[in-house]
Length: 294
Image 1 (tube, rainbow, N blue to C red):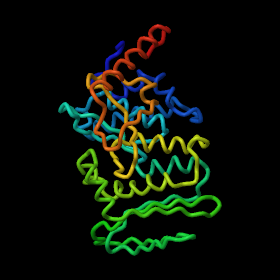
Image 2 (image 1 turned 60 degrees about the vertical axis):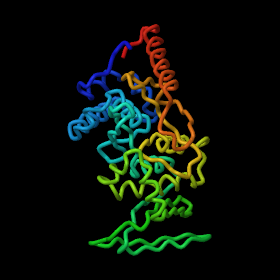
Image 3 (image 1 turned 120 degrees about the horizontal axis):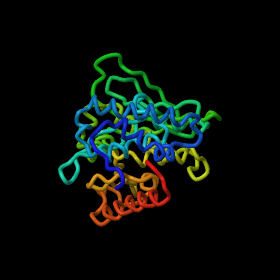
Image 4 (image 1 turned 120 degrees about the vertical axis):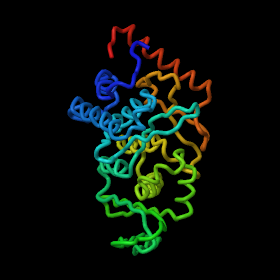
């Protein structure tokens, strides 16, 4: 590679790859450079606050930052985060994690919704969600001693007044938690947020918007697929982003590429990792051949 990634300042690493990041930021962003500078500072601050991230593969940190840039989401606003996961070889990779606020933000950008709500419901909360031709929901959070988790819900109200509600019961929430790649560690720190995110993702799949037609809806679907902290046991397929163990820098083409694998697969094979590494090298060689610079 023409420029290796090291565990130096992540802010500097992002800014040195300015053109690559700008190519990922959506065209409707008015000031891409301003957004990129803020993103670079956010990545640097996360590594300072979480020492476990500092020991992660630096290429995986850049890949997570690229996902945030691609979907115009902010780490500091809670739209998304980066979590260290132990790799098969013993090292750690930083993984892009989408938050419920991030899903809501990109849904609002479609211009189709007036209200998006999500919550984890506990034993002493007041909650009713009768289903039918006109679904409704009542939720009042207990002010103390809320008890154990009962369920979680997500609600989306469209401009025409139509309400879409998805309630996920306790057993399904626990099933998703038990197969989390983090082994439940992420839930220990952000329990209610992680539980509430599950019905948000299920709800999106049921909303009457076509990702093939609506650009912003496609962005929501892509952001959900990029979240490697979540595995839906009922999904037929999951999307994944392979990162070579040798620290090779991901290319723009790699970040945008959608690869399909059977559900619940733990990652790419050695042959697939080698192929992706080759793609990254070829992209770098092509850039040098055109006289491009990082």
